[in-house]
Length: 185
Image (cartoon, rainbow, N blue to C red; front, side, top):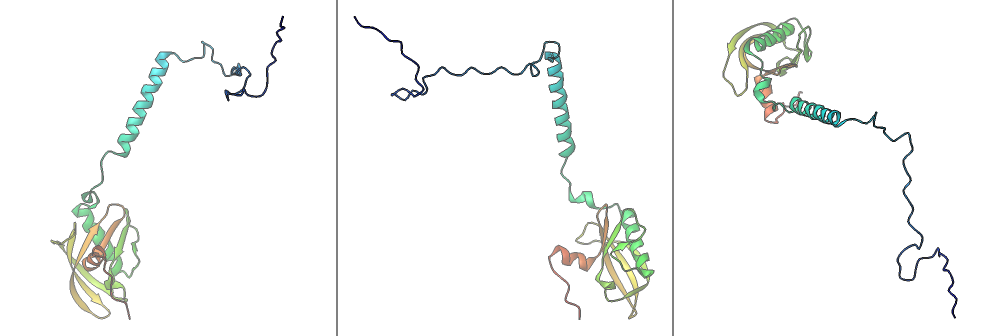
C-alpha cells in the first residue's frame, strides 16, 4: 500500500515555466468613497445633455477660430481713412515731428520715409489724390521741402488697419523687393 502525501504549494515556478504556482491575486475593490450610489450617478439623459453641450461648445470654438482666412484686402484701409492717416503724418512732419509713430492718432499711424532721414524739413504739402501703383492704396503728393529747399512729387502707400502704415512708395518697393537703401555717408 502506498501512502499519498498531500503536496504543499511551492513558491518556485513549475519546471515547465508556467509562472507562479500560487493562485492569482484578487483585484482590490475601490474605496467606498469612490463608489457612486444610484442617487448621485448621472442619468442617461444628463450624460447625453452634457455630451451635447460639449459638442456644441467644441463646434463654436472651432467656428470662431477658423471662420475664414484673412486676405490681403482685409488690411487695406478705406480711401478716406488712408487719406486721413497720410494727412496726419504730413502735418506731424511739417510741425517738426520725425518719429516713427505719429502722435495723437487712433488707430496708431506708423511711418517709413527716408526723405526726412537727413534732417529734411517739410514746409508744405498738397495731397493730389489716389494714383495707380503696384500697391493696394497709393496717393500722389506734392512736397515743399526745406534744408535744402526743393519741390518734389512723391507717392505714398497706406496699408494696415491697426496700426496704419504710411510708406513713401520707393521705400515700400525696397521692402517688398528685399532691397535696402544705400548706406548714409
